[in-house]
Length: 178
Figure 1 (cartoon, rainbow, N blue to C red):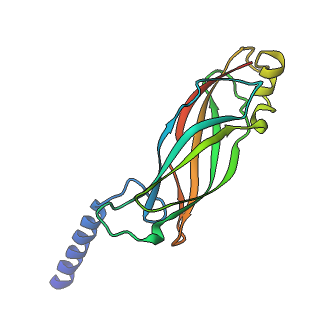
Figure 2 (cartoon, rainbow, N blue to C red; figure 1 turned 30 degrees about the vertical axis):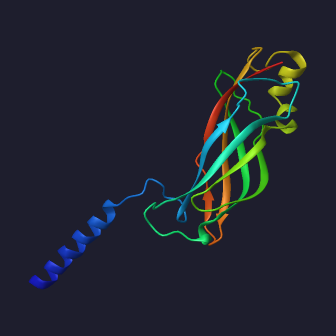
Figure 3 (cartoon, rainbow, N blue to C red; figure 1 turned 90 degrees about the horizontal axis):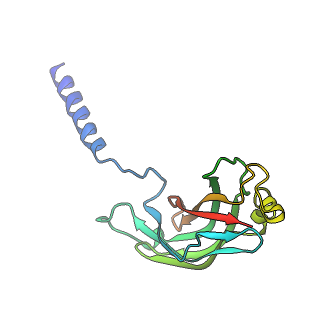
């Protein structure tokens, strides 16, 4: 009986030590997609023009265990990206989500850059609240001549080993005027 208790205690202790090595990222697979930089972000745009783009955005494929071994199976096929919007003002109406396909590979430990990546297309500007602002010069919901939006972007991919990978969300703020 004493042996069983000792064995059980050793097992519990071993499991507790194994649980101490926790990851902050709980996503599938052995790599993380990270939006590592973007350049030339607009701060103000006009609802009557477009499309609106990010001049350059860089996505990195980072191994979750930087001291571990890596392989070409950790290469991520970046397949799409998504842009969502939230309002910083008192309005509640939002432009529709932009979802678009991409075709690129990011080897483990490497970066991939996208130039002139759209973050707002006609589907966003030709729907309320931006359409109201373009037509009438004011937001129909708030009566304001400016709509302040936070723009959130993330990328989706799959490793060659078959693990789905999603980047963290990167955000920036824009003011939309007529």
